[in-house]
Image (cartoon, rainbow, N blue to C red; front, side):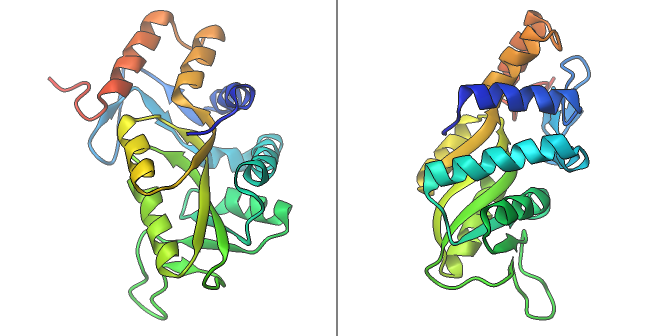
Length: 214
């Protein structure tokens, strides 16, 4: 996983300010997977704050070129990364496509929407990385269309070990604007949480699938 510490701290602070990330160790959230979690992340909120979405766009724009070189196409993962992916593609002056979770059941039955040619270099934009499974399914769909995946850029990652293993096995480099470790350090520093709450949040991150079970 690749990141810049200053960018990671700034991004984490902005996400906390707009409640895109909520930390509540005492009253955990329940994810769609059934996991109990003391953190909830909804990066779609970024699109509603012009100055913050522009910051995210600009950080992606300069770091995508720095980390992966300028690609031929930007691909967004549906649905969370479509909006920010379009902004990044526009900033770079590049075509944009997006990837559905699965192929449509009707019409042309596309999974990748937009114009993509075999052999084109693609950087995938994602809003959030948990286990990485859904993000890497998008990568597989693009590869099936003949794309050459240069890497993935995401707004935030929980930093699960399983995600790191999944990206390594898929041979995909991941760049993130922010991550869980920097988020917690910033949250303690800015008094969003106490050090005791930080310990609870770190425990969850070590074993998210079993945390909070009686």
